[in-house]
Length: 420
Image 1 (cartoon, helix red, strand yellow):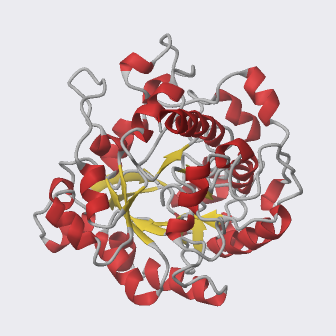
Image 2 (cartoon, one colour):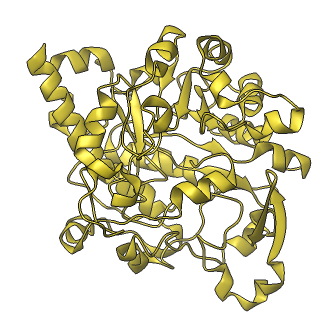
Image 3 (cartoon, one colour):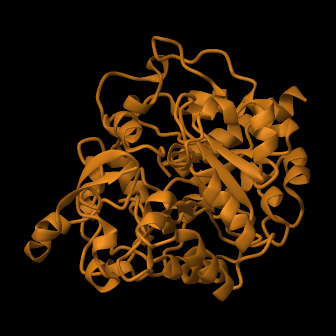
């Protein structure tokens, strides 16, 4: 997941992130996976039978809300609340959208893994990358045979220079290896540069089944269609490809453990006609416009979509929304938290589940009052910020640091149980 518009993403993520420190790395380094995308056995100390560490599922009211059946068979609303969603896996600790990152998220206890920002190859396969431009997430620049593929394209209205997945066959992409996207802020993650290849969505669906068998619990994934209008104009429509793969693997139903998301409402509407999966509309900054709206001349902004009327419309074709956290608690001019908006109340009134994005542990991604020191690669008071978001009543949250999110969730549920 990332914001829909590249210029917004650059502003939000350019300051960077990190993993925490050598002590934390030593604890997390136990998850060992093979190079080239082969997933090896990696037992995780944080696993629990129904999608989280055992203490977090102990609260009686939480068990009632989540449902005794846990993840199995109950659809989107069977997930534990609040749901901890591993953002691009465990991207605080491993290069994002790799099997190393995905499996570590499960080892840490994530209830759901965002396995797949989906973009196509030239020959029509779906692969998992944060963006179609792969210069920052792979070692493509080190491959002289692909030097001539570097180009500038207009991606959702923004000139973007680099290498693009749609200019490579799957076989060519498989010769590349993933690297840490923000090494200045997550230097420890660079240890894993070159270890994993780019996964395909079909490989992820098979991996999901393997992990479900291995762990004895249903593994959930949360893939996203990236820039669907852009790719449809290139003759590489995403939704039909996603639907075909889900059908092939028997995961295209209402209760299937695959939640589909997109920043473009028309992509979600198209998916609704093709599959029965739970669907979520992603929402960027209030003044932004989904790019399919831009292309269609629809003047509405996200601010229009998060009104009670806009949310009721979304609820006619989706079951949830994924707003930026700033739509849940807007920031003041100094960057600190303001008063919570009415979004949670209004979305729930429309029958929608809310899974905001993205919580990260590092100072640059925290409001000033939650930072500790000034280092870009230092952790601030992420626990305190998690509590502020949980207190609004959200149903879950995307985080790069699933272990931190689960501990914060345990604190929140314990306090709620005492207060009740």
